Image (cartoon, rainbow, N blue to C red; front, side, top):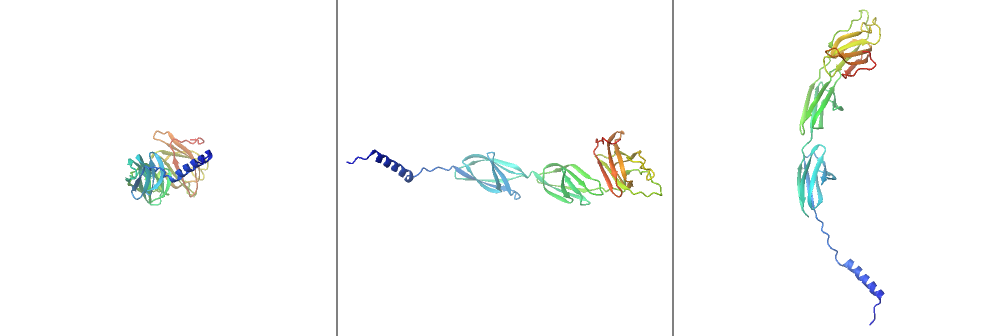
Length: 290
């Protein structure tokens, strides 16, 4: 009998092992996953962020399907205009769980109208446009609304509340500047003088501050107001002199009911133009002699 050499035995064993690897069936690896189908309403929601077990899976359309491992999972749905939604689901192998998600809005709508129209609008310090204006999505809660229109007193609402999912409407009638508002006449120039004049508006965060004014140069022959002296209690805030102030540099001070100076500053009036002062009470000009 022919004896097989040790080398041939080794080679034959290797060949048998290789054949068994490629011919024998591999064990089947079970995939223990199921599906979660998510359908989000209302119809205005186009995309949402989906979190699974606090891990962001990404941005998905309002109707999406996720493949998840078998077991219990926490699903959280988010959209910046809506309140977060979450639930816990048990995913079974090869099965589909369907979630009908109805998001509730965390924002509302703000409509602003004014008489007259065309007023500039600021909401929380940010310009938004002019009236009439509809802001389709604004966060719930209190907002500051500010309106400004040439020839009219400013309007400010510090506590305009926007309700989620609702429309807040503001219908604002702006008060126009009268020819003379809360003022006493300045000294009248002589009949032979016809000096050019400008307009002056002085406003503060509260009404009723008395107004003192002094010219910063001396020329009483041109106008009695230009005598370099304080003219006290010439009006109260808000005040408007329409084409009554000779052009030049002035120091203005505001006083409370006790006679205390609560604001002081310099301004310049230009002929045929309107100078407007919005006094921040408590601010005193460091270089003004008040």
